[in-house]
Each structure stands twice: as C-alpha cells, then as structure tokens.
Image 1 (cartoon, helix red, strand yellow):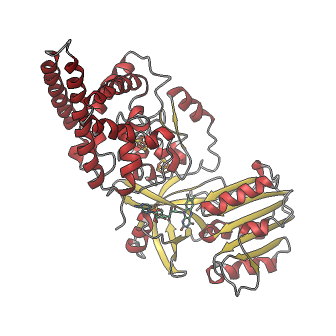
Image 2 (cartoon, rainbow, N blue to C red; image 1 turned 180 degrees about the vertical axis):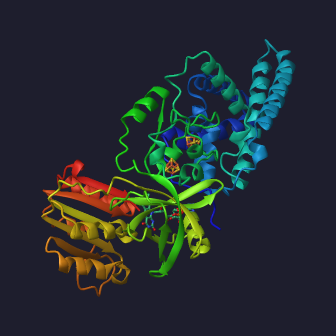
Image 3 (cartoon, rainbow, N blue to C red; image 1 turned 90 degrees about the vertical axis):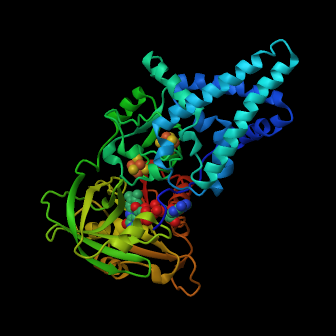
Length: 486
Ligand SMILES: Cc1cc2nc3c(=O)[nH]c(=O)nc-3n(C[C@H](O)[C@H](O)[C@H](O)COP(=O)(O)OP(=O)(O)OC[C@H]3O[C@@H](n4cnc5c(N)ncnc54)[C@H](O)[C@@H]3O)c2cc1C
Ligand code: SF4
Ligand code: SF4
C-alpha cells in the first residue's frame, strides 16, 4: 500500500529556506559563545506577538526551527503518521508546564548573578541549552517520524495558542487572523490531498466551518495545502474575505452534484496501465453535461474520493464510464486497481465541473488532449458530432508519447468520417517510425489559426502549462482558454 502522506515541492521564501542557519548558529555556536542564546529572547517576543494577531503563522513562516524541519530535514524525513499521543492537547500542556517550570528554576538560579558580566552569559546559556534540546529532539523526531512532529507538542506552539486565544477573546485579531478558506465545499473533490501534504497532518477538508474556514489552532498557516489543492479552491484569508469569496463563487457546473450509490458493472483492461470501469446506478436524478467528472469513493476513514472524467454517460442504461491510469505509488489508484471488483458497491459524487463545458455560442473550438487527459473529450466529441449546435468547425489535437498509446482511436476516426465539421489530429512525441505529426501538441497548435477559437485542454500539468503559455504568447485571450489537469 502506498503511503498516505506525500512529500511535495514546497514554495519557500528566502527566509523560510535559510532561517535554519540561525538555529544552528545559536544551538551549536552558543556552546562556545553562550551570549548568542540571548538572540532567542526576540524570537520568543516575536512569536508571542505574531500569534496574538495571526495564530501559529510564526511556526509556518518565520520560525528558524520550522525552517530546519521544512527546508533541511523534510527531503529526508520518513514522513510517517505522527502517533496520536504526540498530537494530544494533554501532552502539549504537560510539556509546556514542565518547560516553564524548568526555565523559571534556571532563571531564579542565574538571577543571583545580576550586575555581574557572568549574568548575561549564564542567561544566554539557558536559551542555548533549550534551543539545542529542541534541535536534537525536534531533529530526531523529524527524521524518524515526520518533519513537523515536534511542532505538535512544542512549548512555544502552546504559548502561541494561549496568546492567540487572548487576541480572539479581546476581538482584536478578526482582520489579521487569516485561516485556510475554501471557496465552496461543493467544489472540493474530497481527495484529501490537503491533508496528505499537511506538515501538521491536519484534515482541513473534513473540518470546514459554516463560514468555509478551517478553525484548527494547530494550523501553522504554511499554505502547503493551498499550493497543492487540485481543485484550486483553497486560500488563506480572514473571515471577511472568506464571506466575500463565499458570496461571489460561481457554482455553475456544480449545482447538480449529489452523492449516490453504484455497482461496478464491468472492469476492462485498456492497456498495461489503464483500466476502464463502468458503474451502474439506480438514481433517477443524475444530471450530466459532457466534459464533467465524477468522484469515486476509495475509502471511508478518512473519507476520500478520486476525480475521474466521465468518458461515457449512458442515460438509458444508467451507467457512467471512467478510464483510470494506474499511477506509480498512487494511493487512490492502488486501491482502485487492487480492491475494486465487478459487483462491488461504490459511492459516487457528482457529476460536476465547469472547465470543459463547451460554450454553446462558440463557432470554432479546439480540444487539446495529452495522455489520459483524452477521457472527457470522448464524451464531448460524441456530443458535438451527434447533437445540434452552433459549431462550424472543431478539432481534436491529441498528443501521446508513442503511437500505441492512443485511446478511443477508432471512435474518433469514425466521428471524423461521419462529420465534416470534425477534424482529428494525432501527434506523437517519441516514436521515430510514426508517419503522422511528430512532436508535442504545442507543435501542432503553433501552426493553427486559433483566433476565432475557444480552446479546451486536458492533460498533465506540464502540457497544459506549456500550451497555455504559448497560446497567451500567440495573443489568444485568456478568456478563450480553459483547462483541467488530469
Ligand atoms: C478533474 C479531474 C479529472 C481527472 N480525470 C482523470 C481520468 O479521467 N483518468 C485518470 O486516470 N485520472 C484522472 N484524474 C486524476 C485522478 O483524480 C487522480 O489524481 C489519479 O488517479 C492519481 O491518484 P492517486 O491517489 O493514485 O495518486 P496519488 O497518491 O495522489 O499520487 C499522485 C502523484 O504523486 C506521486 N506520489 C505518491 N506518493 C508520493 C510520495 N510519498 N512522495 C512524493 N510523490 C508521491 C505519485 O507517483 C503520483 O505521480 C483527474 C483529476 C482531476 C482533478
Ligand atoms: S492546514 Fe494547510 S496551512 Fe494549515 S498546517 Fe496544514 S498545510 Fe499548512
Ligand atoms: S485538496 Fe482535495 S480535499 Fe482538500 S480542499 Fe482541495 S479538493 Fe478538497
């Protein structure tokens, strides 16, 4: 079974990337120059002040130990589940009590030296010793368990939670308190990625409040979930901005989302890495538009789904077809390929999605697919060929690495023969013997006259990103480009 928690490419500010130098300077350099420990005082004042206004923002963005865990140790951490007792409130409070008592005891002892030069050195050493202890214990738990294990019971984290509570009680941090905010829970894929990448191993997607915010005091506001959400529905905002986002979010394409049960009618191997699954459902009221996707439940605890574009929707026989590519080390596809069997009951949610809904007023359309990103276009092309519409012309540009990877090839060829409006262009990247177009989808697009077209793309992010950049350089208005990453 693949790991639940995944490592991601994190975006670091220069401070977040290099602040660990401060940690090592104080914790190790302080052994020779104890006076360096006095630098910890502004750190403690800073974190208490920042948390009063912004919760644990300090931990995720400023803390030098956080930088050590995220920037230096994260690439080599085991990234395992943090045991629940290390995340418990009780441990945080007990550890805070012990830490404060110990620090107080040492302060009293050193206070006898007040007025003597030794006072500052001895005081500095108290902080050096605690900084070194955090570096050692935090570093070991970071490597053996997960990068931010220490942060779950860090006394400074507990101090920040106290300070934040006071700020909240006094009602002075409403505007500065930015929390993880979801544009609308109806647009969330319940994929759990926000939880899988969260360094604190929290579950934002299961805990959004009525105000669409994640209220956990343990959230260190690091924005890792924001950067990794495949639905792009997360932001870091205060409660006023959250309300504005909630009111202004357009739910077009998500208005008929519903949960319903289904049975796996068939599983067909398309090729070595792709299986086709047909789900039969009884619900009378499933509303679908070509280009939409469905969420397939893969587990209940914690609840998680995976999004798959509907490649075929049969209203009469009440079936939904999806084609799933097995990902190396993929958590969800591991479950689907290993556990899903014909006759199994599977919960679905949807259909939903608006990115690939073809503009009914469009006269010319270009569909761009890469790899498994072809799946929604199977349903879209069928619809455009078979139903009346305003289109004068539409083209499918379909890129694959090798010729034998093209899916639904015969179907597209038949549609191209049946309709003189539809043009089917295949492009192969790495097959020297291929006789048709060679290269990437961008090589085909750059030679097309795209000015009157609406362009819809689906494929791996490197393809959609490269194509979008090129189309913008070709002066295609951004409003004429839509895409979904698969
Ligand atoms: C709207 C939409 C439509 C989609 N339609 C389709 C479709 O029609 N067909 C289809 O096949 N897919 C589709 N997808 C993708 C699909 O939802 C899943 O993301 C995909 O099946 C992979 O899921 P997974 O859980 O197996 O992979 P994950 O476990 O989420 O892994 C994703 C990637 O991360 C890597 N990874 C895994 N573990 C680690 C680790 N520990 N450290 C670092 N990296 C790691 C994996 O190698 C993989 O490349 C669609 C996605 C969206 C958003
Ligand atoms: S919920 Fe998001 S912002 Fe909060 S700690 Fe987890 S990844 Fe960071
Ligand atoms: S990462 Fe997935 S579960 Fe989390 S908010 Fe985004 S879509 Fe929802």
